[in-house]
Amino acid sequence: MAEGMATLNNICQKRQMLDAPLFALAQCVAAATLRVALDDARLDGFLVDGVLSVDECAALVAAAERVPAAAGGFTFWGDGAGCEARRLFRSADTLEARQPELARELWARMSPHAGGAVEIGAGSARFEPDLEGVWDPIGLNEHLLFARYAPGGHFAPHVDGQTELDFDTRSLFSVIIYLNDCARGGATRMLLGEQGDATERLPDGRLVARADAVAHVVAPVAGRALVFYQSALHDGEPVGAGAAKLIIRTDIVYRRREPLCVSEADARAYALYRRARDEEAAGRCADAAELFRAAFKASRTIARVYGG
Image (cartoon, rainbow, N blue to C red; front, top):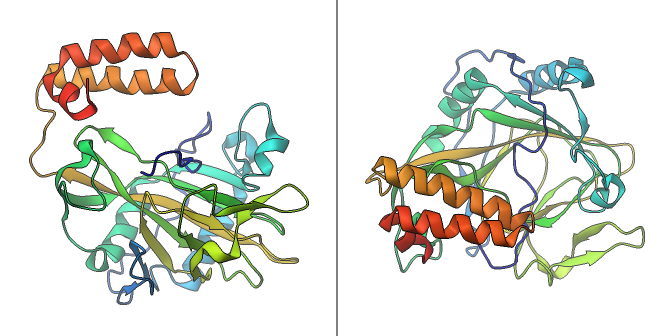
């Protein structure tokens, strides 16, 4: 991930997650069509059309809309204080849902087009010290984020947060599945350059992509899946008047073929390291430093990978 990039699109952000099945898809592994690469060679992603039928999209939207807000249904994406300021970055209502069966069926449809193993070496553009190795896809993240954008709804330029199940099992690619045709606006725009340089502020305060930073525009089409590497900078174009956009956001999860974190000490150290990152993000630097030291002392692997 490029230094300084904001990760504003983690799937699990709220205190409440729906844990009941929303809608059961019929098994239909032949639904999706051939994948299409994005037309700029500098972009790390592709499209798959027909992952869901128009009727399936409508049924999923209806099922999500029926969930009361008090039971985990659609509410503004940012819990807590500062909602108005957060709307300048992202104006959307979301529903977080654990949907293992739905995720499995979506993966059955997408996997023939999703590519195989991902190899990340020292010379790779994707290289980060903790990502070195060969990664095999194992499925979609069963935690799905449904997002609903009303007229004017947008998402500022950002990169997506990574889902880490453990040190050797994590997401590498984001997936956006569009649940409707957005008549005006609402495109996902893949961007080039640094986040700050690619962003401008509208007169009403919303942050959006600069036109000269846009490398590729993906129109919201019901049933279409956009897949891209999670360090890719992108934004959500403001939805036009009288229109709406509904999507599912999830990840493709991978497992490292030759695990590096193999002992109980490694696992404990990695847990300490993740706690340290959380403390650091919260501004508690002294507590973070103590946890980092403990993690690096507990595991040579964690110390080597993260520079302890």
